[in-house]
Length: 352
Image 1 (cartoon, rainbow, N blue to C red):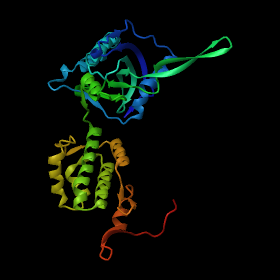
Image 2 (image 1 turned 180 degrees about the vertical axis):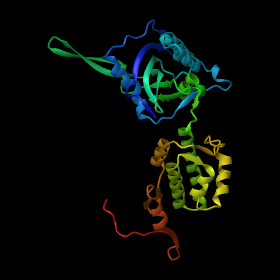
Image 3 (image 1 turned 45 degrees about the vertical axis):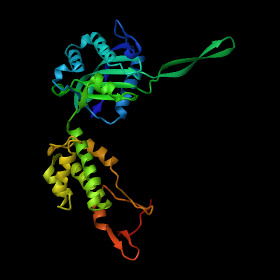
Image 4 (image 1 turned 120 degrees about the horizontal axis):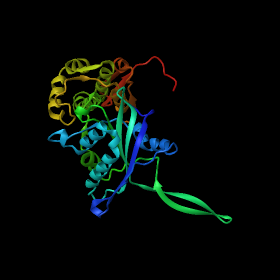
């Protein structure tokens, strides 16, 4: 979890980067931008709004040989070691971005490099580096008095309501490659920002693993439980899985399987499915890990708990009280109609 409410922008360097494929150049400012009380609140909203609104999927700098060969990792370390040199390093960051700007779809734009203090991440107060890029120009109107008339002047500028690209590099977990958040609103070349410029992989902490394991469980429920049992059991398996994650601080696979799989014949099926699909979800070797509560809450909101029938009827099962579905919903077969049915027991109907 991050908190940017008390974050302070210590310095700001602004440069412009073009597209090498179109023979555009790079413009590097000689001095940092002189911040003032009027511009700082606007910049904070522009820079941070997208990070507050998006799901926190963390990244870390990576390299196939060794982390020390990652350019942005070295530049970030240079800044964190000596923050007073950030403007000179910001020029290196902009040049590095320019070198990756070869794809014909990549747009030119302004690059903002900031040094930030008083950020909170995982209950730790740390510094961070912000690298942001504006790409899309928006039309806006200005008005000017001329005699007894108002003249309308059409101009272009940056829309402060939408950040095009950006990342926050936290001075935290350096040994793993720092913890990083990224935003990319204009995905015309999805590899440009994350892979070519930042060169990052997903940060494999408890939040990442919890999400991936629950995604894996969804796949198992759909591909194995539903064909072997029925839709109700698919939903109830995910219900029990989420509840296991919600009530435990530590995940243990053997305990999990014994608790959530009513049919013991599905346990070897689960293990075989993990051998086949575990690498896809990055959990092939995972059997124990700390559970991230925020990831469980996110998963609960995204998992469907509805049985859709071909008779245009929906049955919604309650994830909060799963025992109700276990006790009061039965599935059967009607010989006369040659159709399946669900039998639902209740005492009285509730008001909507």
